[in-house]
Amino acid sequence: MLSHLHIQNYVLIDQLDIDFDSGFTVITGETGAGKSILLGAIALLLGQRADARSITTGQRRCVIEAEFTSLSSSVSDFLQAAGFDSSEPVCIVRRELMATGKSRAFINDTPATVAQLKELGDLLIDIHSQHQNLLLGKEDFQLGALDIVAQDSALLRSYHAAYKRYKTTEQELRGEEQAWQGERQEEDYMRFQSRQLDEAALQPGELEDLEARQRTLEHAEEIQSQLFQVSGALQAEETGILESLRSVVRKLEGISALYPKAEPLAQRLESCHIEIKDIADEIETSLGNIDSNPQTLQLINDRLSLLYDLMQKHQVSTVEALIQLRDQLQQRLSAMGGREERIEELRKRLAALEKELRNISVHLSSSRNGAKEAMESQMCALLRTLGMPGIQFQADIRPTEQLGPQGTDNVQFSFSANAGSPLQPISQVARGGEIARVMLALKAILSAATQLPTIVFDEIDTGVSGHIAESMARTMRQMSQGQGRQVISITHLPQIAALGQHHFRVYKLESASGAATSRIASLSPTERVEELAHMLSGSAVTQAAIDNAKELLSHSQQ
Image 1 (cartoon, rainbow, N blue to C red):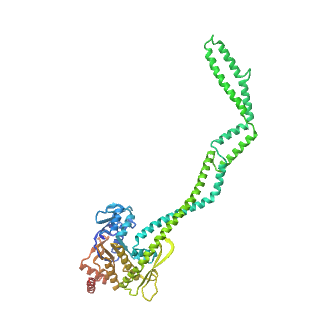
Image 2: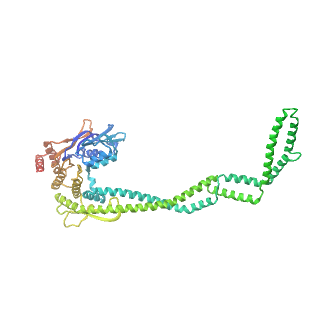
Image 3: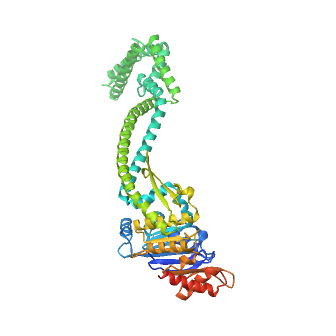
C-alpha cells in the first residue's frame, strides 16, 4: 500500500509530505485547491508522460517519491526479475523532472525505465478518474474485467505468447508472399536473361582475345607481306642477315690465333646469330599460321557482335561483368524456388499456431463462462446496496470465429436499472450517476479478485447524493478492509467524507506577493466537523451545519 508521498516543486506544490494508512482515506477541498495536482504527481510515478511545464515556476527540477509497504508477492517477483533490490519489505519509486525536459526514474534507488514504472504501477495502485467511466462502454474493457473475475491470467499469458508468435509469423508470411508475387512477374524475363547469358558460354578475357584475332584477320595480307619480307631479309642465301653473320663469325674465328681478342667477339656474334635464327624460325612459323579465311573472320565478328549486344543490353563494359550478372540471376532464380519452400513452411507453422490458439481459446471461453454467473450475481448484489433495487445486469459472451488479441470471445455488459425494462448495452442506457455506481461495483469486484493494495477514486461520486452517496462510501470502505489494503477517495460529498477513517484537506495559500501554493493537512476530529460543515453549508458555516456534520460522523461510526 501507499504509505508515504513526497512532492517537491510540482505545479503549485512547493513541498509536501503525506503519510497514508491502510483503510478508507478521504481527501476533500475546494475546487482548484490542488486535488488534481496531487493525482497528477502520483500518475507521474506510474509512468505518465512527463512535461517540464509541470515544474514550479522558477525551479530547476521537481521530485516525486512514494513509499509502498505490505508488498504483494507479485511486486516482489517483479522487483527480483527486473534486477531491483527486493531484500527490504518496502518499495520506493522516485521520478525527477528537469526544466530541460529530461526526466529520470528510480525504483529502490536503481535507475528504471518508464515502461518499468508502468508495469510496477499496475501491481501497486489503480487510479480511477472520471474519464475512466467511459471505458465501461468499451468491449475490450468489459472482456478484461470478466477475465479478472475468472482469474484466468495463466491461460491469457499462454494465449498472448502464442498470439504474438502467430501475428509475427502471419506478418512474415505476408511479406514473403508479396515478395514472391513481385518476383513471379519478373521470373519469365529473368529466366530469359539467364538462359541467354548461359547460352552465350561466356569466358573471362575472351573479348580482348577475339578483338586481337579480328585485327589480325582483317590485315592478314599486309601482315603476311611484311613477315615475308622480314623473313627474306633474315634468311636470303647470299644477302640475308644470317648468312652475313655466319661469314663475319668465320672471319673472326680465322684470326683468333693471331689476335686473341677476336675469339670473344666471334662468340658474341655467334650468340646473336642463334637468337636471330630463332626469330627467323618463329617468323617462318607465323607465316604458316596466318589465317586469312573469311569464314573465320565472320565467325569472330559474329561472336563479337553477340558480346557487344549483350554488354549494351545490360549496360556493362566487360564480359566479366556479364558473367557476374549471369551468376546473380541464377542465384535469384534459385532463391525463388527457396522462397516457395519458405512460404509453404510458414503456412504450416501458421496453421499449427492457429490450432494452438484455438485450443487455448476454448479453455479461455470455458473459464469466462464459468465466471459469468458469479460476476452477474455479485454486480447485482452490490448495485442493490447502491440504490438500484430493480437492477438487471448481464455479461453476454458472444463467441466469434476470428482470433483476436484476447481469444475468440466478445463480451458486452447489458444493463437495466428497472426490473420491467429490457436489457440494453450499458453504454446506451446508463446515465451519469448510474455509470458511477456500476463502475464502483465493478471496481469492488475486481479489487477483491486482484488483491490490488491501493485504489484511488477521483470524484467517482459525480451525479449521486444523499443516501446513495453514503452507500457508495460504505462500499469503498468495505473495499479497504484487509491487511495492507487502502482506498483513497477524492470527494465533494459530505456523506462520503464522513465515512472516511482518515481525512485530509487540500487547500491553497497565497503569499504576500500573490503566489499561490497548495497544501494538504490531516484533519483532527474537530477539524473534520468544521470541514464537513463547510461542505454542507458552503462558505457561511451555520450551527445547523455543524450539528449535521457531527451527526454524519456519529452515524458513520455505527
